[in-house]
Amino acid sequence: MTDIYQNVTNKIVAALDQGVIPWIKPWSPARGSTYPPFPINAITGRPYRGVNIPLLWAEAQLQGFSQDRWLTFNQARSAGGHIRKGEHSTLAVLYKTLEREAKDEHGNPILDEAGNPEMAQVAWLKANFLFNIEQTEGLEGLYETEAEDSPPTDEFDPNLYAEQLLQRSGARIVHRPADQAFYNPSQDLIQLPERKQFASESGYYATALHELTHWTGHASRLKRHQTFAPSPFGVDAYAFEELVAEMGTAFLCARAGIQGELRHEGYINSWLKALKSDKKFLFLAGGFAREASEYLINLAEDHPLAT
Image (cartoon, rainbow, N blue to C red):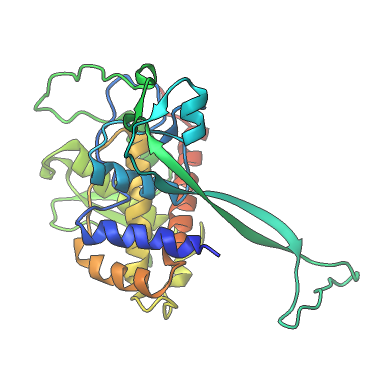
């Protein structure tokens, strides 16, 4: 039986070994684009989610694709095109959560106080092999066309969506003429250097959103910082939280149309060690990252800034 957890982990490990950071989108979206900021299905327009995001972003970087649009072999044929001869598919995952009766270690049903069977959620995974739209012929009409970029400016150009994420979160953020950016859990405080200290707007927002992702893990919010205990993955718990923050930041940057950046390159060896020792490490980190990014997106979109 195919071990999808292991196959996905192997793909991510191979990308990291080649210097590709799978959770960083390899290009910035065209200005004025109406498409979602994540990999999407070229036929249905639905964005891929969860672990599929780093899998498809990694393959796009490794293969040099400029399109973030994917489809299956049968979808290409049904749309009147075909996969170019000699092209190889990319592993993605179909993921569902199913409910089943909970059982103890002996296989006996677990009952609640009323004697009814308790239900447990079980992850269901199935391999889903995709091709990038650039691997097809006869489907050029499905390509996303690039809009012309605006000329650069020397002034700080605020990103409205990123500002929504920061301001509507309610996080306590202070800017100081310092050389450090960090989140302090005991004070529930984010400290950032002043905006003028950053070389670019994308650098500022990537840093700020990284610390904001850490902020979501506080005990009064998503309670993720309880993982700051001995890690079951053979990696320092702080390094695990940094991976969560790296992935969560990449998802937020993509949503805001900002080029993501890797902030903690020094942890790559720790992440590789953990990925190679436990096939579910990536799925857990990715799940926390998705939860954190969606938490912040919901806060921002429930109370958008006035334009």
